[in-house]
Image (cartoon, rainbow, N blue to C red; front, side, top):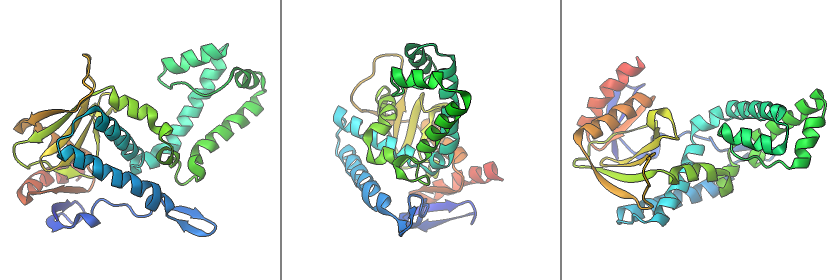
Amino acid sequence: MVWSYDWIADKVEERSVAVLMAKYDLYTQQTAAGPDVSLETGELAKVDTNGAMLFRRLDDGDRGPALREELADFFSVMALRHPATVVGYPLVAANFVIKFQEYLNVANSIDDFHSVMDGNGLGNIEISEDEFNIIKNENIHDVDTVFGQIFDSFLASGGNQDVPFSHVITDPSGREDLKNRLLSMEWNLGRSKRPKLVIGDAGVMFQHGDSDLGWKAVLGPDLAMLITKQKQPISSMIGDVILEKWQVDNLNMEMVARSERFLVGSSKRIVEKFSQYMVRNNA
């Protein structure tokens, strides 16, 4: 049980975590045979079970590079399965295809193409020199058809257009870039002197809204994982830091600002205190 504030009901009450922050049928796939929930009951159930084991190791004092790497993979899955990611996926896919086509048009060779893609942060695309030459020599109508098919394939990744990201859950290679981004940052487990942290439906918070700069994840009433980009060499271990009162307040205020409806915590007084700011932000 936790103390929970619901913005719609506008009150703080003690509730079970089993009924909080859940979105029903988000991963259900509609098939000719009826609803298919195998992604949630199968692969995602494994992800959640593994996540619980990773946090238990963290609680037991493990701070090693192996745990850090496994947590990076877990956080990548959590970011990619978030409803906001699911909703925004078609627009991101469309923008990517537009950029893909634009860079192909200006590139004179396959090396030029890879250089332009890398320079714009889009990474390497698996396209051979023969494929590059074929696309470059096609007429405009055929090229548009090709890129239309590419866009459709993005939306159908994993075999279902309603769950376009499902392949990154079943195939770890699909989340490798995000995982490597996390592993290139400094990791610290922050612990507050008192259990005064609140958790909202924002989940993971990005530094200045940019996942390239850092991640902040509140894990409990007195724990938060702080993953930040550093100029100096980083450690392969997870560090331990003490969160000062001002850091706890800053984390809580940012969580309130980014959350839309729910706020939970172990203290009724703390949830009531910060829920007041949430009401004003959403009014």
